[in-house]
Length: 268
Image (cartoon, rainbow, N blue to C red):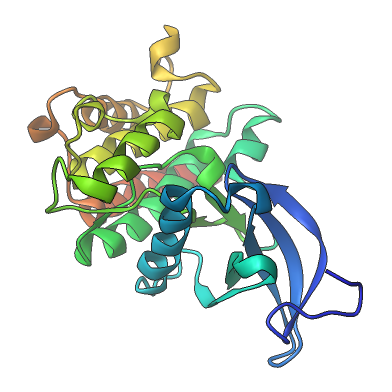
């Protein structure tokens, strides 16, 4: 793309902000609405992979239906050079939770607050019948004042569809291959996904935010707030029927823990 060209006759790509398996993410400027945006632009060398193209398209369609402050908003979709699809998203001026972890584990209060935000975003997705299926620190953006925003709905599935066939089956198999295996619930590995599966992944993510380790690493939740530890232990139970599957209720519980920890820290 030439330096003077605008993507979709509207968006000026300014610089690369990140790379994903399917797309390059650009920080860009919307010349019509005069605002900064983020654009996921599909990789040229993957255009011959219809499964990946369909997954990318489905990410935009699913995420665009979710209007919630804890989910990265979708503004527009289109096609650029060589029919490469792109997704125009809300620009979030902040790091991912994965980037925060590279500096070390988070404190209990902050980890609980961020996880509560993710849970609220999941609750909005679940209310529309979607299961995210790829909750992990790399898919959580941290906006100013520590607002967690869930992104990357490329593996989203309808909660009432199990063991699909045809193209959907290929999408599921591909997702299992490239998804984050260490975060997925036991039943998800068997092709079954529900709201409880996302809650499991959030439990694994929260475990990592607290300890810097994954639950399967042998690390233990020792010395942390007992109530927060209890929540995580419940989320990581193997049987989905034993887990908290109501993400909104989970968010309320985590928010209450974060607020109590804040009050204890301030001596209130």
